[in-house]
Each structure stands twice: as structure tokens, then as C-alpha cells.
Length: 378
Ligand code: COA
Image 1: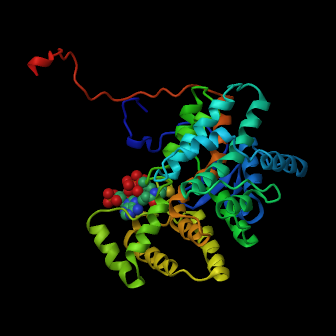
Image 2: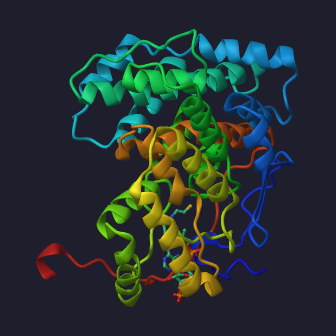
Image 3: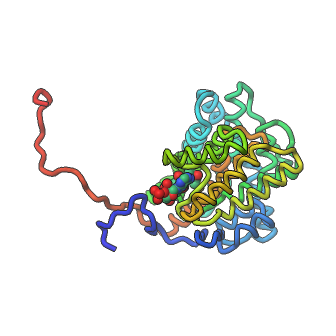
């Protein structure tokens, strides 16, 4: 392909060689290191999956115990980071708070000893362990409360839900949350992962890598979509209003949040799993009328846009699941980030193992040989 063949959004252009995950968008297949997402959702845990993504193989029992132990005992954040977070405006978006806090870790640990496996392991453990603590701490502090100390007797997901609400979560809820993290842990060369790899390719520290990826994840065309799904379901308000709402949106050529994907042209396999998890939650903890609206919207869009390959993506049902867990809407994307840190770190490790700095080209569309006009003549 000639370098001048410009593809907006780099659509279809490989940006890296990677053995971390695989998507078949026509058949709706997602694999992490060759293992189907359905298999991992059913049988693995988020931390085990993170290990798989980052180190390329499932851990042995002893390796898993050691890894879980290390993550468990690195959950606390430095008081100086907590103090810094206290000065953030309460009205600020939690994704911005997370980006700033993740970047601040680099102030304490940025030795950039990238050839040292111990440095890599420490950074992986610290980021996986502290990102949930930072998300929960900002949530409590913006309400004027002190952050809750992590509980070492609770596993990864139960501890996060505990830190958010100061109540030990129901085991089914904690397990479902853990599956949600597994589903969001990695997804090939999406925008935030690309951003992580570009930053990694400069050989900067992993905290800068994660901070830049968090910034990229925050946009409404990426991780921010699940927040907007809830707003949309509230706006629709009733099952009867689904089709008129859809007609109106389509006439105005507006996108329907939680639908469509650059790669999947069928229903995202993660959406299928999330829908089942939503049903389990509603069965145990009570029905949610927005679920009926969501299902009706899915049917209506399949009729209208199915031929274009527009089906629910991962963000469509995840918001309903998080809402039922009592997670505030503007924490949905930070929760996505908690999960995706695993994928970003896997890509960081893969990028630096065989690095070449990203330096693409551009198609210049400006002028040449323009002479400078002094300000008084303009
Ligand atoms: N609602 C309505 N129409 C949609 C749509 C949606 N959510 N997503 C795509 N389309 C339509 C486009 O209008 C376009 O139609 P056209 O060919 O008649 O102009 C066609 O499908 C192709 O869309 P395009 O935006 O070029 O696809 P993309 O691959 O660039 O976009 C997304 C992928 C995810 C950015 C896009 O589907 C979207 O914006 N979805 C909503 C946001 C969202 O849920 N994001 C989370 C992604 S996991």
C-alpha cells in the first residue's frame, strides 16, 4: 500500500503485531491469548485473566496465589496522592480525577527500569491494585467523606464494591462485577490501547502509559458510551416510546449509544454475556424497567439497522448492570478503566519487548512558500 493512501481513523491498518487478543467481527468471536471470552467469563477471575493477558499464559495455582497476594497488599494509596485528590473539584469528572491520579503515581515510582522484570512486575501490581482504590477514594471524597481503607480479607472485586459503599457486597453481585471486569479487560487495537502503545513506544514510565490511555478512554465514542446509554434509556422512558424515539434519532442522523462497532458486525459477544448477567441481577435484586426498554430498542434497531451490521456493543447492557449495583453513572467509565488497565499493561509489556517508536506520516493539505505578513498589514 502506498503511504499516501490515507485512511481516516487508520481503519483496517495494522498498528502492531500482537498475540494478546483476537476479534472476529463477522462471527462475534473474542479471545484473550486464544481462550474464548465465554470460557473466561464462566471459569476465570479478573485477576487470573489479567495475569493471562500480561504474562501470556494462565498462572499455575502457586503463581496465581502469589499474584493475588501481591495485588491485595498493594491496594493502599500514598497519603500524598490522597491529599492531592482531596484538592480536586467535586464537580470534576471521575475520569479526569483518575487520569491525574494515575499520572501522579509516576512522581513516586518513575525509575523507568524497563529492562528489569522486577520493575515491570511491581508496576503491573501497583497499577492493578491502586486504580480501584483511587476510583473509590475520589467517589467518597467528592461527597465530602473520607476514603475507605481497602479490606485485605476481601477479594479484588468485592473490595472495590466495599470501598465504594462501605458495605460488604452480596457474593453474587461481587462475582458478577468480577465477570464484568474480565469482559472489559482487553479488546485488540482500540483507541485507548493504541494510545497506550504510542506512549509506551517512547519508553516513558507505565504510569504515563496508563494515564494517556485513561484520557483516551473517556470520550463518548469509546468508554464514555455506557454513561450515555443510561441517559438515553431514561429519555425514552417507556417501551411504547422506543420506536418513535428511534425514528426521530435516525431522521436526525444521530447515533444510538451502545450500538455499532468498528469491528463487530454482529452482536458483541460481551453484550450477550452482559445481558445474561443483567437478568441474573434483576432476578435476585429486583426488576428494572429500563431493561424492557433496552430489549425493545435492541429489537427495533435490529429491524432498522441490522442490515448495516449495527447491533449492541459492550456498552449497551453494562450500564444497566452497574446501575443495579448502585454504581453512579459517571463511574461507569472509570470502572471500565479498572478492567482495561490489564489490557493496557499487556500491550505496554508487548510494545517495549520489541519496540519501535511510533512515528506515522501525514498527508499535508496546507500551502507552501507563503510569505510572512507583518501584523499591521493583516
Ligand atoms: N446508531 C445509528 N447508526 C449508526 C450507529 C449507531 N450507534 N453506529 C453506526 N451507525 C451507522 C452510521 O451512521 C453509518 O451509516 P451510513 O453508512 O449510512 O453513514 C454506518 O452505520 C457506519 O458507521 P460509522 O460511524 O462509519 O462506523 P464506525 O466504525 O466509524 O463507528 C462507532 C463505530 C462505535 C464509533 C459507532 O458505531 C458509534 O458511534 N456508536 C455509538 C457510540 C458507542 O456505542 N460507542 C461504544 C463503542 S464500543
